[in-house]
Image (cartoon, rainbow, N blue to C red; front, side, top):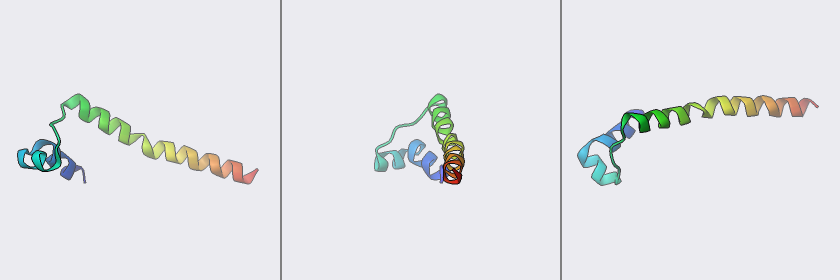
Length: 55
């Protein structure tokens, strides 16, 4: 899936189809850092729900 996103952002004909612009390294790093937070946040939320359910 990441490969499709890279193509949509960096290949000229795909940029015109999807209306995207190239991202620099800092922007890619921000995207990856943001995406990397989803799983840990969900795991913490799941653990909190289990604690609340146990009472």
